[in-house]
Length: 404
Image (cartoon, rainbow, N blue to C red):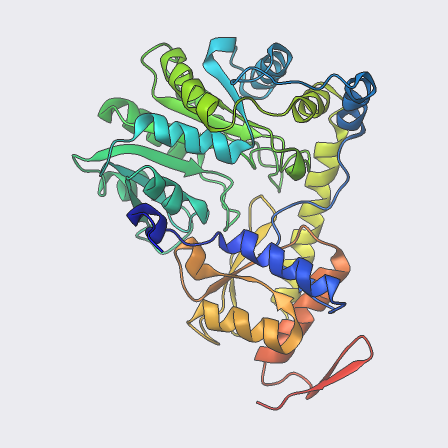
């Protein structure tokens, strides 16, 4: 079969592939515990569901404008004014089929072949392949000090004549790190001076812990006019637990949004009518569901950290936000793919290998599932890895005996 060079350069999304695997195992009746998931288990806000009922009753569900409905843009304007203290115009907004598409369309709009996009590592699994799809070059940058918190010098040292954009994801997937206000201010100013696009992936922006406040890039933007190269990405998937509705958005300068709209019009047309109605309901409705989710995630994070600290050999960095913990398992196996396969084979616990995020020896563990799953999942992991663990383990009525 003849396929393109770009297609051959891509790999499947590690996280989506594992979600599929977990579904298949559960359908077979296997007692799998999915600690690799990337979606909250809380219910969709009632206001989101209520907003769709009238449209469903009308049976008039039609095409929408390629950049989103007027009502959707009004909701995004309200959201941006409330959470970023910045009033934007409808022509500065595009609504998409998820924040992922907003980011993809932005990259397609700004990148020429062989231009570079820089992003701190560890990074979200899709960044490198999304850049490759645009014939660009992904440049992941590990902080020099070995932490999950980049400094502006880490970015500066990797910028060259072909650099076109920088992507910043804070809170970060997979580490949960919230980057400092100093770094956000520095990166905004650095990109302005160097005439680089700055893409702020804020999809987890409101899911932060320990009394932190979400960072706001607009606090450091001197001019968000027609020459601005700031692109803000957000959506309803994470904070409102609306992953299946696939509504995200981008905010940028008018000319860029116009180009992005042209691209999106040929890709998918406008986002679904029902999904936009639901997103509008969530944004304009009662916001208690976001705070309830944030509090629940903070509690589950604490439980996960306590359980991870119960056995030796792990290096655990406490997440500042999101619903992920990125744990150094290299003491047991520096090959994260082998380790993840071992845990799945022996005790049916799904984790995501750190290699997919640009740092081998680590596993990404999610705490967006139930407390019971967190505790039992880590107990199973400990049983496989810790030589001081008991020789036997029960999973339901099935007794396992360590034979390795």
